[in-house]
Length: 84
Image (tube, rainbow, N blue to C red; front, side):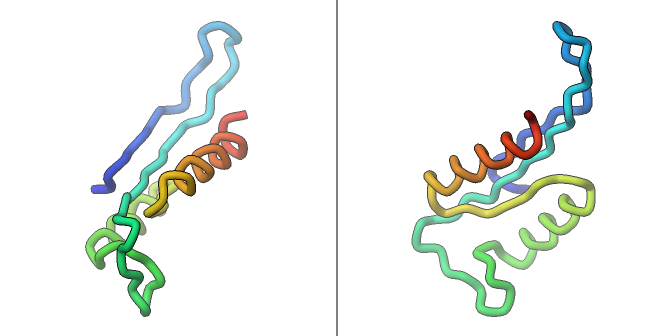
């Protein structure tokens, strides 16, 4: 299971009555010096990659991160692209 999960089902905004998009976001945090697998280009273990693939297939936005600033920027981009 990824280190950070955030999910929200498709719902209605109680104030506006508009539909609010579903949010399914997962992050696998790694140490700053985490080794990158030459074959996959990822820092996650094989089992973690399999879980990430299954989550993506189910509609989750899944990414791995070893830098807090990069995490924050990825979240901002996700919000801009998916929640506005």
